Image 1 (cartoon, one colour):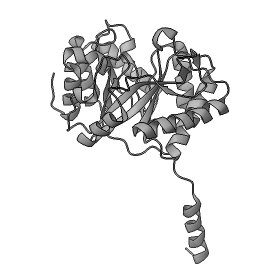
Image 2 (cartoon, rainbow, N blue to C red; image 1 turned 180 degrees about the vertical axis):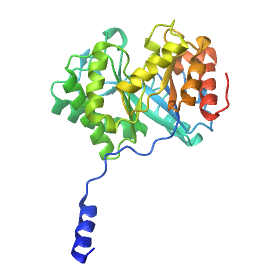
Image 3 (cartoon, rainbow, N blue to C red; image 1 turned 30 degrees about the vertical axis):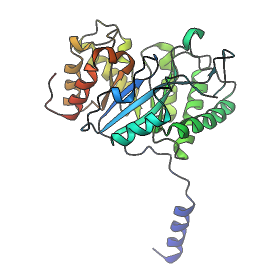
Image 4 (cartoon, one colour; image 1 turned 120 degrees about the vertical axis):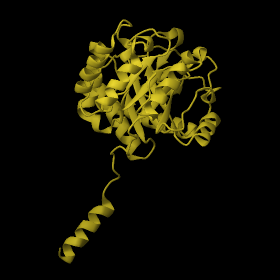
Length: 306
């Protein structure tokens, strides 16, 4: 290469914008939603297996809603999880004591107290993204968080608007180094899927995990049906890291007593198991976090049988 060419290449490298590509993610991850039900559960209550590559707590939830005025706030997010027990100092302590722990915040959720459903309700794409970037950057920096999870389940916007708002937000936060991971939490509902698949089609390259809510299926789900559902959603979110999931209150999906962990072993054999997530620590506390222990043991050992 001639000298002029070398100079041009060096200049391009120097002026190139920061990459928006996701950081390298672990081969397997365990994730746990926490704090939505105000059951006084603490990070330190949850068993953390040091041999699991990464363990993610997802604070539930931050919502762009003002409870005093009972109105949605167009991307200005406020804390709606148990921040007394799950405080900035608690986040710092659990991350200091466990090198494999990361903490993120989940946005949206199903409902907000007695105010009804949480709606994705932007005034415009530009205003929502600007407000969300500013308010979440402040919240994430205050709590020293690592990422965000998108869990809107009700919509007063079209799929295109949702895709652009969420996609642009993730891109901005990653580009500026505010977050290191982003995930989405859809389930098998026509309206929900329309919105999340529009987001995936345009911005899937920025999304590190798909926390698909397999527990939204009927609790009579069999191992065969679960694997069929898993493969169908892997096809929908092609190229994504789809996580297996269960609800620890046994209200839906493939229950552990009906073969959840057996199904996970089959997925691992087929090299499809990227991780497991549980909803939620608040419910698990009453049962001694039995499913968290089994899930992490399975993820850490190829020979584990529950």
